[in-house]
Amino acid sequence: MNENTAIYTRGLLKSYGSVKALLGVDLNVDCGEIFGFLGPNGSGKTTTIRCLLDLIRTDGGEVRVLGIDPQKDPVAVRSRVGYLPGELALESNFTVKGQLRYLNRLRGRVVDWAYTQQIAERIELDLKMPIKNLSKGNKQKVGVVQALMHKPDLLMLDEPTFGLDPLMQQEVLRLVAEAKQRGATIFFSSHILSEVQEIADRVAIIRKGVVVEVAETKTLINRSLRRAKIRFKEPVDASGLAELPGVTIISQDDGVNAMLQVEGEMNGLIKALASYPVSDFETDRPSLEEIFLAYYESEDKGS
Image (tube, rainbow, N blue to C red; front, top):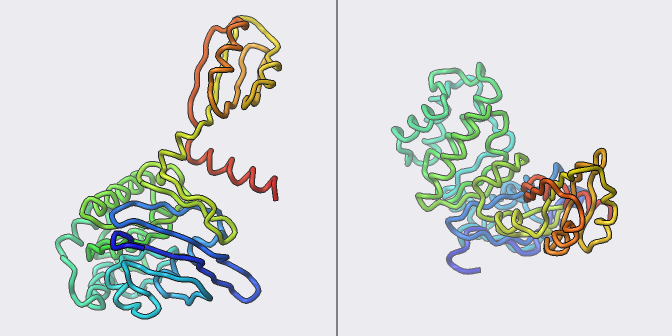
């Protein structure tokens, strides 16, 4: 770990009775990056975040957040972190403004109120509304504002756009990107893989309490896995293409249209197609969501 490290864990362990939630989580998040944390429900995402903030105690392993051991000085860590939990507890009898003012007092009145109002306006949050009258989506907006309003060094966001409509999702992502531009580090979990693909610099995939892969987002997307759509001038039997290294036939409709998956170089397929009456040939790369789902499907088949 060095001074440019915002989050560092080694061998992080956590159990709930007989249920082993984290089996040795290793993370290294650099200062100033947007880091996506992906995994299905129950994989350990929320437990990891809570351990990082000492909201729950680990059973073992090493943790540093902004160079601080959160178990030794949780107040120092939380004073520099903006945290949006998956389930945010709010005071139902407060107005939105009252709730945010209350949180500001707890933080030592460090918040720029004009900036807070600006965030609220951008995500169309009415500060005069009582918390008890808010929809789930508007309560989520309160969570977004309270996480951002003190301009923290580190944002920890657990499903930050959950319950928001698409336009508000995009505005929240813009706010996150602006926080990065100010120098903040963002660590966020999400099940909306398109938003991770849009803003994350790097991604970690957690499976059954273990981080199984960490990679740059563009590296995952640019892996040598492609789809090839082929249209033939006349019906043909393209089954022979499946004998090529790395080629899998996904579908072939009426002998004219075929969809292939190609892992590795395209050269062999292109040469083989020279003997076929091809009228159209198109390739594309899978999205992060398709890579993620394929990864878990292959792992489940092997387990």
